Image (cartoon, rainbow, N blue to C red; front, side, top):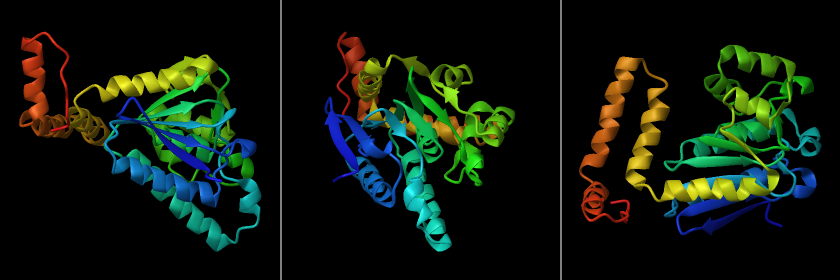
Length: 257
């Protein structure tokens, strides 16, 4: 059985669904391999936005601890390398990514969501980097990505204590953008992805680069980086199409050119 599926919605929206509901979508070796493959499929496709969700009542409960128990130290280190590569590939996709946190998102499950650009959560969601309760630390980007989103002090409080957060608690600190009724989460996430997909794709990709890289730079350098990203859009056919559509009072038809 496939543990990860990929669908296309509204022509330019990709939907990756984790498909181990009986295991709370825990990240097994098989799931990780299939997720990496699907991310590469998305990268090579015409998708302009990606939604990532879990099947059933969980986004992902984290690493598969039953499988982990039988691993040697070398296998654990290999898995840690592979999960870091996978989440970095997710984070580095040129298109916007949306994590739809539909239930539990603990440990590696939350680290997966942190690798996305935008996070929506259901009212029933619970999330946290709970690794210190298992004698380890977040090892798939959690210590770094969480601190950049919510700040160093808050990240350390949550990581040290293994705190589990509700969707509303997470939204109060900026970890998620919106909290929605469980029945509305999937469609609201897809609706946002569809709205994004109707923007000029080269411009959206340039904006993502501007924000992501700019956050790591001093303000003066970040503003220069923004200007360089802007230059990528000047010679595009999409920019001319937008101007023409405005003059003709119609919706632009962007082609990513």
